[in-house]
Length: 220
Length: 311
Image (cartoon, rainbow over all chains, first blue to last red; front, side, top):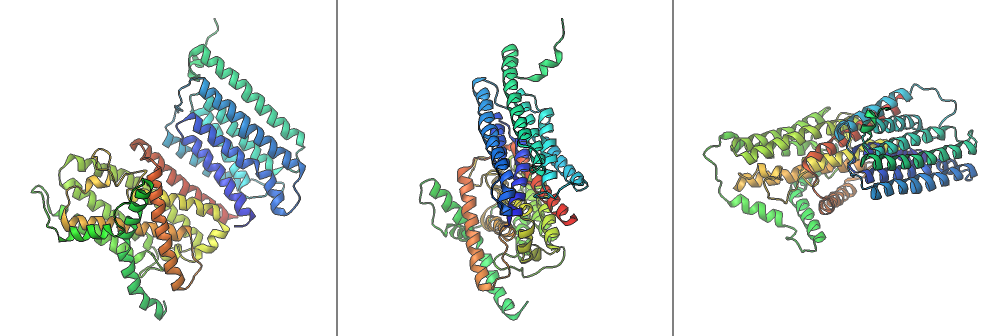
């Protein structure tokens, strides 16, 4: 097992966690899978340096620490709290069945692999899998976003989508200013924060978090 | 194949054929240990088989010859498959390009006859078990074939004993993640095909929940011994496909290979015992999801190996 194999394995594990999120029937397990996925991703900015034998850059280190603090600890904590205190139904309630969504997810992953080999890259990536994994994480996040009923699962889909962007950002890690990365993390945090408030209000208004009822809202 | 290999083939085959009940015993022992019990003696499966072989057979008047053919064809198919699958050493006694198809369909043939024999009794319970068995069998097949595809791409061979032989050692170095996925898929296939928890519980005797056991309720005496032994042999065979794929040996001499494989099989039996003791049986409508994920794992592995060979 050399360095590349380990990075590749981590990236493959990230896809598997995505598919797992499509398959689990409980909201809390979905959130935990997301936390695990973010934890794996947090180590990737460091991995490139470690395996090239370079000293750990401050840049990668800050990003890893920020990711862990925010996406592994804080956001899952907020989401789990909503699930616990919000007295929501803990089932996921998908539009598409679990087996079907896993299959659709697999097709999306295969599609992104097919697309990714045709994309030209400005710099040689740490791993050849980064682009396809980023694309499939984006698409699977999108799938979670559109195929689930509950507001929490939609937040989860949004977060997974952001994880995809994060993986894509690894390609340009050296070129991106730290400020941009931290800005993204802050945006994410604010986004989840607002969504938590929104979820709370949806629930207080309708007694549940089914976003479907928002379709029939009218101006009066 | 050198001379030593030919001489060693016969005792090796005898060892392979003697092994399966012991593995069953190891699983039962592990489960007993988890439950804080002593469990039956290590050799209990052999005693059971011996006892069954001495007994007479009872046939229902409604059954036809299919019911009698079921256990025999089942055993024959497993024994034939055993000649094509490397178990203790790294190459099987027989083999030709494309024999993986034969192996897969020998398993399917055994399943078909078991199902037909179950339907032949006319019992509604057995029909129910048969329907479940066929459903799950059909769903685990794509996973098995996709895993074989990945192994074939990785090693560039269509012969089972080469696909999971020493060439795989280099494939692990270059395509590790894909191989891990294949191992995961094969593990799920193993648990499904051999009717183990989380798909089926071999210890249960409640007709509504069991799959394999309910199909063989009406078999007695030597027929039942054949079925029990064939099931154990199937576990050994699929288990060694899994082990050879998971832990490829880079062409070590026979006296290193055989004891090591033996230990690995024992470890696999213990692992299955641990899985059975720590996991609950899945709800029946969640099983297709598990099998779908096995297929998805194998499909992802195929994509990974394919993109690697494209670059």
